[in-house]
Image (cartoon, rainbow, N blue to C red; front, side):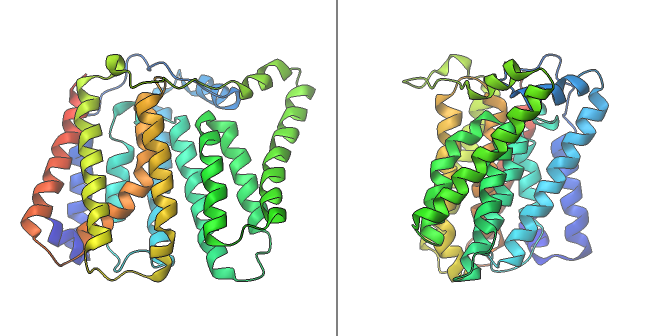
Length: 325
């Protein structure tokens, strides 16, 4: 199975589509959405789609496919993986739609999309040398827009700043450009809400979910245990393989590893310590996990029987999570 997808060709395409179909056959319409915190902007979008679930699912899945395509493009264009294959696309779709709730448009899906755009800008920043142009302005603007759709975006801001420092510079003026451009997005949005007479709705952008001081397992269901520990094990295995194997990867990829680890740490923290948005926040682990998993599965060295076994376990876990309500 792994060998066919890795080698590419028409057989790999059909097998990839078949595997994606298998993991989606157990999809059920979610009767009641879990308790979720929406930004005012996303709440308006959600309210306009909640009476048309077919359209919501269609847009949600199309958005995931768009993200998977963008993710694969970033890996290939910036040579973050050794070889091209279908694994980045397949793994991203499988992980991003692991729960039935994630088939619909949701805040985490929007946040993932904007994080991919930020990662692409950071990678270009690493290539551009001494003339960053408008890349800092782009990063700040994307950060501001992401917070309009997902409140969890605010937790990524310090680590995006750290990523800029790692990749390019610690120049305070460049960091101020990022922060000020993010603030300008909110200033413009606030003006629009004020002219529409909905400024009180805009104020709720600045209310956030508190974190539990300890891990609260009361809201964890069986299907969450299945996927969470499978994803966690896969992340650890693939990352250790990335560190200690002899797989050839670009210097850019090695330098950029710290940023993917930072993003993985933030997403893991949001999943474990934040009670609300549980089913959606799990999708935030997708970007770093899909990268390292792609490197792991694409490498032709090592024991293919173990990779096939692990891939099969992932498929079973995804189907079980969707069936186990």
